Image (cartoon, rainbow, N blue to C red):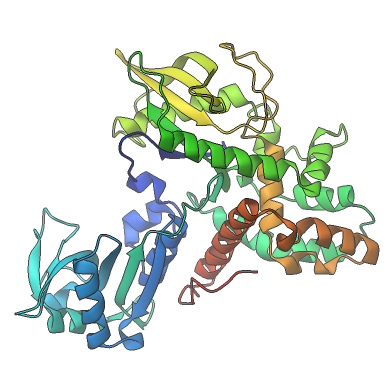
Length: 434
């Protein structure tokens, strides 16, 4: 199932079920999360992050950041500290800092465990001391991080997930094993290269890379699309168009449509890779989240599905998949805003229509992931002519700007997951990724 929910409307938010990058949620619930992996998580969730261990900064620099962020809406400070230093119960903890009292040199802790400790003031010197305690699980000091909005929302179409433990093997396969496989075979054409990669994909690969679904609650009789929604879907559509215009996409599409394709272990290549079915499942998941029941055992069923185009004031049509989700006796209308590469999408209200050109599909998702692999992945190809051809197809500099950003975002997530796997997450997360 290739999707991750992004809720839209007059308000948008995250809940914990969406924070599934860098560390499986079940493991976080059981054992907590380390400083480095929280940095990785924030980065994967779309934030700009600057992280400082206590031994990488000074109390004066910390105070300066707390002062700045306390009077600004553009940045936030998260402190990682040991509760015992504050005479509180517990050990390691994370909390945002909501204010600074200059006269008394105190920080306002907005404790995320409000049932245990409501917002309270802490002397900044004491907090700094608490951040210097060593985390016994990593052997490193705690610290603080600055969280701010990036220049644009990353992951417009695609994101990576480690919702279950299988991500470790998948990340290892993509970041190491693919290169070794290509060195071990004597490939002479691109179709052989794709066959080598796709026929060896690990189990649950379809749960690793997902498309980002734009979901909203449908109000009775209101089919209008806000300017913000139009702008986001338009950018998504342009990125999708750029993916499908790459030379690599044409090779991937040809391979997947080949009668000789043997990628039966890749879930999206089966009957599940069907847009109406996927969109119906997204509607159900969106309804759960909108109801605040993510991960509940309640049964949600999507009925009365309909795909249509909404257009106003000469704008390009926006493709919308609408569903009525039933849960017991309650009903909830849900819309999925769908990017499309078609210049003239057909307007209809039938799930039996032709969905070519509508995202998601295996060919565009796999193309984006191949483009995001480290450049050195392909260096083991023995045939010099084939190596040059592949290198030209995947060269990031040859891609349009929007697609470059998408690819670099995915590549950064791959590197972050590799570092998490190796417990080497304390690196410059804002360093350029080629």
